[in-house]
Length: 314
Image (cartoon, rainbow, N blue to C red; front, side):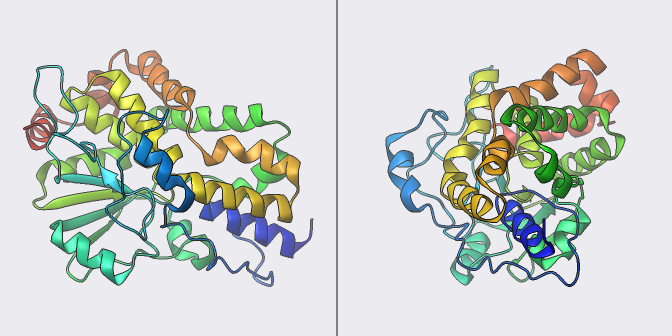
């Protein structure tokens, strides 16, 4: 594979929400300006009608330049219900994909929402390399907090995956690593601790807002007492928000590497229930319960967990 082709492959996969290792400095980068990661485009009718992804799909995105931006409490109604009959508070904690293409209008909207802090879960290489997305574009005065969790070397993955099943297995192992990897646990603990104590609206994100971000949202919703079906439905909504970008990305992968590579990598660009379930099963294997994962695995204090629940639940 030529360096030019490898660079194209790297660029399109990062745009779809993933991180590649650095490509040769002499390689020609693909111009990603035509790939609109904010507009819902053809996906809007699906969102308006509701989708198989679950009830959390809203009729419109609050931000136009950030495709997977949404409220941890859900974007419609009173906020997700909890086991004790209460609801999550909307407008407190948000999740999204990377804010690297935030428009001026959307920056103004973020200020209107009272955004105070942004926690960036992308690996340092994802942030530093402009081809990997570059730095967040935030409104003046918003506090930026790097909280890196490396996404791994997907250049090798792109050239070694032989079947879609291997892509699925890779994503399942990625979710298990959120439980087994000490650096990942430390980063999740840092984010949750900050979310419990900082004032103003909070936001966390990774590159596509589906994996590292999806895991963080699951933890918050679990702490708040949201039922497992609602949590899974909310996790799966990323497929709806990212569908337009995913289809464009797959087309570019096909052109750069071939149709087989696109098929093999398709699971990596999406979320599946078994991805999250693999991580949850690992919690059971490693810690027994979610509570023990939070306290023993992440090292969260009972006070921090109580503050998070109080902040999240009305």
